[in-house]
Image (cartoon, rainbow, N blue to C red):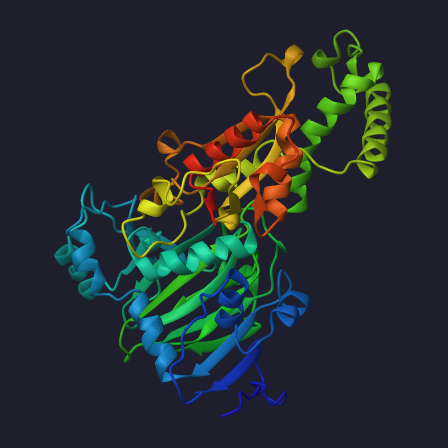
Length: 464
């Protein structure tokens, strides 16, 4: 059957009306997400909305509700996470606070019912049944393969970290008070039904999480029920609350979130240090000392005027800059994202396979979506002696088990470093479907072989 768009309200009713809503009839055959590429995955996730329409009309602007009457998709969504999955997960050693939260909204406030130490399924089920508490499971993609598969593709698509949380709420209960988040949110309804209310943002595109009092947010502007197979999107800053109505089965949904600290402001902060570093090498005014005691007094008009002039100088230089130096954002993204999805033991991500590259080999890049190539000052030299180097960071050896868990001490960067003279050769590899090693723009054959061998050892290229 053709897919039909159907407006949700007549416009005559009083009170809240649903947000932009797509009613989709069952397609008559198996329905699943398309994992052929990052873009095809996202297209299938928001189907029947086209991606061009989504980013033009909804992204960072307003909520989108896609309600589907598709039993196959509902079954697939239901397989992503179930209440009963908690039993096997708890047997692997889950802890309160780190892996799971137990909470309930009481009089507009979040009441946390966590115990200490390990979470046991029988205790979770008791709090769920008797206290009508919501169970929140953090970052289930660490354990659920299909969520890993989805979120890894979405990280490739957005170029931003993608986290998730599962919320399981019993009938006649609500887990969290009205609040807004600092992330773009995609909600997939997995089990049961959930009643949602959305409100106008008090802080559009918010940069932090905040609870809002009922009396401050007014009446909801959108109100609806989510059923298995349905999808809801809303921008960061959207105030929302959700409950499972009495008389129904429990509700399970997964919140997939992205674009935290990924704004133009963040990017400006990230790139400006490299721009200042480069400009100061050539502009003696930027290297001149600040006035005596400037740090001991409030900012002066002279200092403000001086900084304004420097910013204009930087803006002029930026206009002619081909490559921006990212100081942290690129590296942080690659260090903390998921490794490529692997249905096997992941050996192809850690052990080089195929033939050893030689001078007469033809090679191609692999896992391109998981690699960044960036030019940075040499990290191993003092500030005065720093020269630019080419850094290649990749996520092939990242640990899925620590994804989005804030384990900074367990996180390390994986990659390679090359002299700036290797940049053109690396770009050849990056921008070609295949390339002959002997055609790489390097001075000697020894450099050519050494470069491809280094990349092959990291599993970044293969011989074709």
